[in-house]
Image (tube, rainbow, N blue to C red):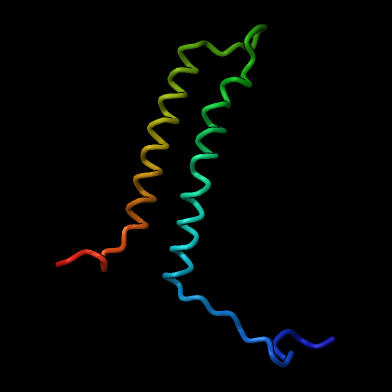
Length: 89
């Protein structure tokens, strides 16, 4: 079998590092709402009865920590997606 570099007609794919990172950040921004939903729904899976119950205060703290984390995540993603070359100086 021939090596991939020896095949005629298949050019080497090269993506500029900045473009590649920008696309991965855009992918993360698309996945962020689904991640937030899963993290917010997680307390619904915690046991409600029995010995291993989680108090509602702990669940509420968890929800607010996730909420703050989502805010920080989306802030960081929006800062990363902001292109400083687009601004007028």
